[in-house]
Image (cartoon, rainbow, N blue to C red):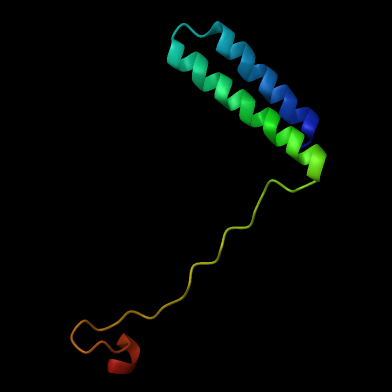
Length: 75
């Protein structure tokens, strides 16, 4: 996603914010618009990718509650 696309999303959120009837909705749309603008600025400034790989879950072997040993080695 480019910074220009992010700014377009921000502008769309601002228009939804202006059209919202409830204060909570206006504030929520405004917060999302701010997040889109911040992301665009960060991408332009730092050229930092916005997608950060998720950490891989550790692979642990289940323990037998009675012995405290790995289930596979306890069998």
